[in-house]
Amino acid sequence: MSQPAIQAENLHKRYGEVVAVDDVSLRVEPGEVLGILGANGAGKTTTVELIAGLRAPDRGRVRVLGLDPRRDRAALRQVLGVQLQHAHLHAALTVAELVDLYRSFYPHPRPAADLLDLVDLGKQARTRFEKLSGGQQQRLSIALALVGRPRVVILDELTTGLDPRARRRIWAGVEALRDETVLLVSHAMDEVEHLCDRVALIDAGRIVALDTPAGLVAHAGTATLEEAFVALTGKDLVREDVA
Ligand SMILES: Nc1ncnc2c1ncn2[C@@H]1O[C@H](COP(=O)(O)OP(=O)(O)OP(=O)(O)O)[C@@H](O)[C@H]1O
Image (cartoon, rainbow, N blue to C red):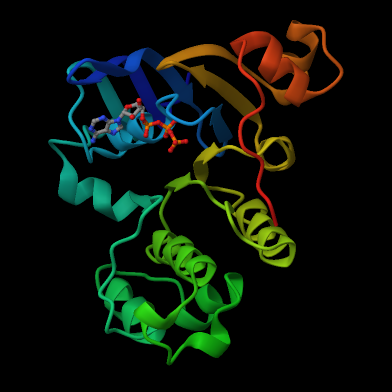
């Protein structure tokens, strides 16, 4: 079997009394788009932060393209792109300046114009980060995750809060990432159905099911992925994106 793009084994993470991630194991194959779907507080962000090496697990093991995210940080930065929920970028820099800054970190960055086109920010190139709307800031953070032509991309809440046109554009951008491996955190059923090869349903820090969208529906014996989510997690539908 080929080396997995991402391998997480028995990850545990607790914050005081709260068990955020409880024995999570998953394997993502090269080129696969794997969705992590769960309600608020289910442990999605913590799981991807452990995989990206942004937090240390209490127990368990992570490898990304064979690298240990905490030990091999410099090597990992060259192959992993991360878009997190709350980007902290220099407020006074313009979009173009931020893109140029990030491009300078990589030997073969994507062209700035391609990145701005992907996220539809060409007209905002001279706008300071602090003057962008929330959705524009989010789109910029997606572009910055892709600057270095990463082989593995982690996208957290890809299109939450974006309008329908921006969502479709970003989806098309993700679909165009044919060789890359994508780990996609989402609340949105339509998004995971549209983009993901397989989906991990996470509830209270545990993966309760991991299969293709069609496999989850068949396993749950329901008509839709939304109903399968409710049947398999016992939770009401997670917040939907409201465009
Ligand atoms: N830094 C932290 N300190 C303390 N508790 C935390 C911290 N980060 C997360 N938690 C708690 O851990 C649990 C999992 O949080 P996490 O953010 O991973 O969930 P999530 O599924 O990404 O949620 P959301 O969809 O709301 O972003 C929650 O109960 C949350 O309150």
